[in-house]
Length: 226
Image 1: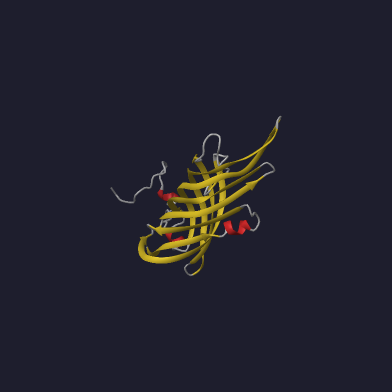
Image 2: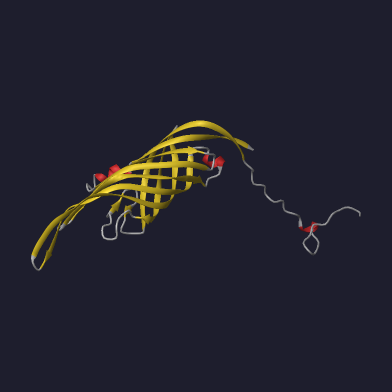
């Protein structure tokens, strides 16, 4: 059997980041992606975004902002006749890079001689990480889909010195941990650019052999005279 499978270019925006900003004014995250179907099973993906983060306590005020890029592939685990270019359930793999600037706007420390107030000027850094992202996506209207993905990240380099590490890494999250997790909710626009013929092999049920045609060893007997 042969089906016509539409290969698509996709552009998506994450709505979880802006939505969470209304609940947590300390973190603003904007993110989107572009993808290109290579075939009915695999797509190339590039993602990018911007993060602005600040964290304050009674004795210090930390701020960071920067951009991040992630690149990799998505694999669709659904059969072509099930996905039909409309549905996706699978997993993606990414390499990520974070370019950021960070500063301690002010901090204070108390000791025997009194209270010491100071600040640490801004500096730039580059962090690296990898991630796996299982998720699902479904077509809501023609060429418009929604979906979500879970982000399971592993930090390779935090981009900071031993004594001055960024609290929050754009694209990764809390850099005080080697592993981190997150979630994205996407609205996706799709543009079909090519139609591919995909051959599907239907499952064939094994034919049961009547017991009378089996010999004692369970091998089918023939009915020929020789």
